[in-house]
Image 1 (cartoon, rainbow, N blue to C red):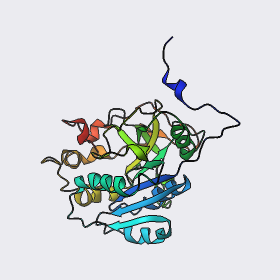
Image 2: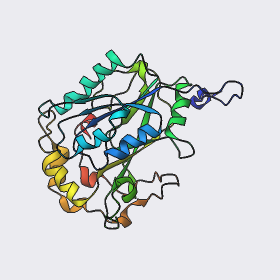
Image 3: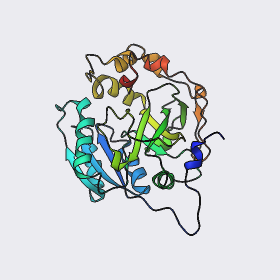
Image 4: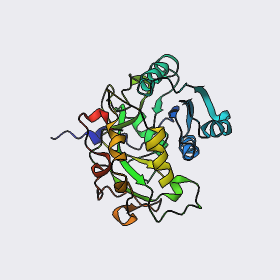
Length: 284
């Protein structure tokens, strides 16, 4: 008989309901104040406590965090001079020392990402409860890139409500954003696997890297400028040399109505914008 990983998933038992995991959300923030409230609200609505480190933001992130101060178990300001690429390891060690024994689950999206389950039939938290009550330890996410287009209504301030066009980034580096707190390891840009088996279902992630034309220009020329890793910043440097390609027509992408399942057909070639990496873990 062929072994099926899905057979290990928890089955519904009326006399033994799924336990409710205690979940911690982690956010490393830098100059994404426009979408930060939605990132915070998404985690709060999915029953996560929050730890937030602000990496030297100067765009109003501080004021956004002030509004949610009562919801944080920890808030810390990290000077911009601290190496961005060392933040992941620093936060990982911090979680291992102070938090992993007190929580069942950790979700660590980027600040411009919204985490979802493998479908929209249930909440992200409901799916987490399934994983916590299963033999699996961590989750892989499919990266659905949402991008500004000419059809966006500038009167809609909330980025996730304004930006509805997307396509799956099929061959990007793995998005590993959530795991059992007990297996927390030293994160390498949040791409490296953890101990034990991953849930066999691909979960979904909505990524909003470019939200207006002005945001795109600022992101390339200021917020992501100079972020050299192993001597290069090829990802953003490549974008700056092909600015015209970053203006994607709405007709080239899928439309998200907020209710239907996301379409996994990769109808847009994101490599035309992002270029090709020499190593998989250098993508962001």
